[in-house]
Structure formats: structure tokens, C-alpha cells
Image 1: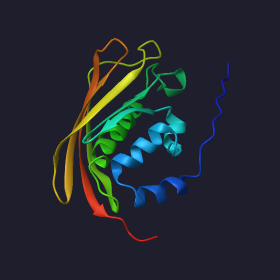
Image 2 (image 1 turned 120 degrees about the vertical axis):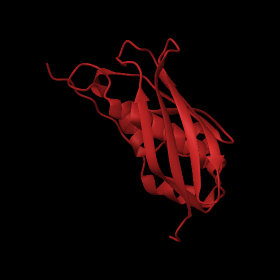
Image 3 (image 1 turned 60 degrees about the vertical axis):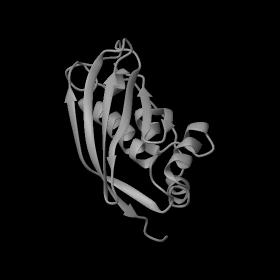
Image 4 (image 1 turned 180 degrees about the vertical axis):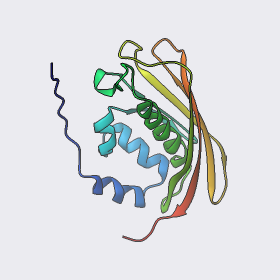
Length: 164
């Protein structure tokens, strides 16, 4: 039996402009409050911000069967996307206006399968180190019962935003 899913997203140019002119923490808090729209990827995946602060970020998603891989569990790419989102945003909270970042690497270690019965999946990320050019962060991903389903680390490259 075929299933269907539809959704909408906001024009990403509004976010890109806001990212250039706001410091990272203010930018992410405005997304969380609804003053700025969520990123299109958030609409696609269902990943939502829960909390951000100086050097940390928490994001969640509710596993659904449209997240599944062919063997009947949530695709590891979804867990990786959740981790990359929280880790990158934790780094972003430390950035001043006019500074951008990109992930240089992402390592995810899976410890438990996730299904639609796992409950809300939560990723809590924290910056470990931040220099002038790079930052590192770590995260723990847990299911609805608080069991660790994965953990992750990243290194991000920090760079000035190019003009318009």
C-alpha cells in the first residue's frame, strides 16, 4: 500500500540573509521562537530545535516510517543529520555576526536501532574547543527512554562570510 507525505518550507534566502547579519546565538534563538523560519532541511526531516545556548544545542525528531531504510529501522542518515544539525548549531552559537562555518568531518557511532516505536529522538551537542579557524563539538543521541542510540563528534571550519 502506498503512503504519501506533503509539506511546505520557507524561502531559504531569508535565513541566509539573517545568518550574515546576526550573531549565531541570536540567529538560532530567532528560529526557535518562530521569528525566523526553519531551514528547508528541517521541514524535510522533521528535526526541530529544543534549546540553544552559548556553546550547546539540542534538537529532536519523532521517528516515523518515512524515515525508514529498507530493513525496517530509521535510516542512519537521519541520525547523522540530527547529529550534524545539533553539532553545527552548537558551534554556530559561539559565532559573531559575519562568521560562517562548515563541517569538516562528522563521526557517528551507532549503538542501538531506532524505529517509530523508539519515541522522540534527542541530540544534545556541546562545543569542546573553539579557536580562530576551527571548532570541535560532541553529541549524545538518545531515544524516548533515554537510552543512547548514537554518539558523534565534529570539527567545523570557521570563516568570514563573503559579501552578498
